[in-house]
Amino acid sequence: MSSADIYRELILDYYRNPRNFGKLEEFDIDARDTNPLCGDEVEIQIKVGEGGKIEDIKFVGKGCAISQASASMLTELAKGKKLDWVREVTKEDIFKMLGNPDLGPSRVKCALLGMKVLKTGVYGYLGAHFEDSDWSGETP
Amino acid sequence: MLKSEVLDIEKVRADFPILKRMVHGKRLVYLDNSNTTQKPKAVIDALVNYYSAHNSNVHRAVYVLAEEATESYEGARRKVAGFVGVVPKELVFVRGTTEATNLVRFAWGETNVKKGDLLVSTLMEHHSNIVPWQLLAKRNGATLKFVGLRPDGTLDMESLENLLRESPRLVAVAHCSNVLGTINDVAKICEMARKVGATTLVDGAQAVPHMPVNVESIGADFYAFSGHKMLGPTGIGALVAKKELLEEMEPFHGGGEMIREVFLDHSTWNDVPYKFEAGTVNIADAIGLGAAVDYLTDLGMDKVREHEVRLLDYALQALSEIRGFHQYGPLDPKKRAGVISFNFADVHPHDLATVLDEEGIAIRSGHHCAQPLMRWLDVTATSRASFHVYNSYDDVDALKAGIEKAGGIFKV
Image (cartoon, rainbow over all chains, first blue to last red; front, side, top):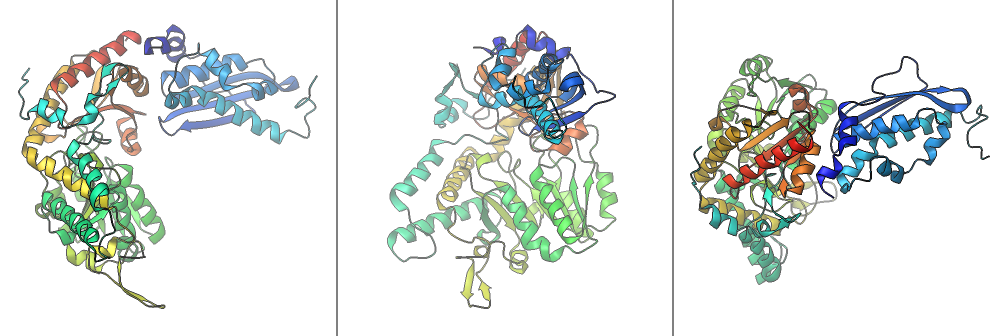
């Protein structure tokens, strides 16, 4: 696959017009991480709603097209879902979301930075709210 | 544009086996020389020859192999020392510039830097000439301050003068910036620092590989550089310092080789520079570095420098024709090493590097281990193309075409 395939319309569009970009006035989750290789930076904030739902989610960041588009698309995917959904998200889901670009090992980290931040934030929150939660970890 | 050759570029290129390699089906265009350089066959052969015919430990045993190894290792020290204009006793082999600055931090800094002392570095330094001084300042209760930069990417000499008025204990400065290419007038800086009693350390990692350097005439107390950036192997470099200074200093690592006599309650130290070369040294790579120095000497460092000035001049003109191209650093190629840090429209350096990689072009992208400088430039990262002896005008043309291709993909 060529770089023209990696940087298709979809990724360029999210890079230049990131959805859910910004900060929330009120939030329950705030997580940030950087990719030391590139200096890519992503911060994600989440407002948790009724029944552990992701009521609102925003991100800010700096970095390459892949890291920023990936983070933005992930926030769109996460919005409205239950926090437990975040536990099930896999690398493969992220690659699929980006259109399965052929990324070398060093660029895979860019693609997965948003997921790492989202999981770090949500896992921390779920851990801290484990006892009083009547919704987390339950299987139907 | 002028495209005249000062080196026989085809002959030089034939000396580097890796340049025959294809990358993604394209000719390798290697433009990441500030990061590390490729190795000529002479250097690779020197390593193979040492391990094939002379391998043994140095300075110890009395058999033939050991004497050959010792002679080759000390021969390498003579060559490298001569290459930068000092005597062999004043050259300590280390792993590289980072180990050199850390050696100074421990062996000189721990005993010479006192609470309340001032250490001075600059905003254009590589992390290896910042972080050791932060650690030293923290441990010994000193303060670390930085010389500012002028908008053209040169050192702000007024800022330096102001800091010198505070009588710093140490002034640590790059001979040449790994990002901006700025060549600092280190001889003048060392003279100014000496007048206020400061010890000076010059990071020569980006200078020694690219231009004639004479440490004696620069007058630095410490001068450090790395072998792998000057066609030599990884894992070898040098710290150069005056013999008296090395003699005064405490050892760095303790162990074999660096001692004269060991008793249960104390030890005495070997002569310099051996006092700073504890344990089994990096014999093979030192010999490889000696071979690199021979190779560069044969080409002539004046010619190496002139070659890079011409390439830089050509590249700055060619690349500035690209819409959206923005370069950092002084514009005069005579005041700058063969390195171009740049950004291209809103294309992130890592994305550009990915597109270029597909064309077989290797550039560095990121913060170049100079995060304070990135903040000063107000960028998170830059792309960087840097030259050495085997780069040609064709390489610059390939880079230009690659950036233009990225412009097409990114609809710049």
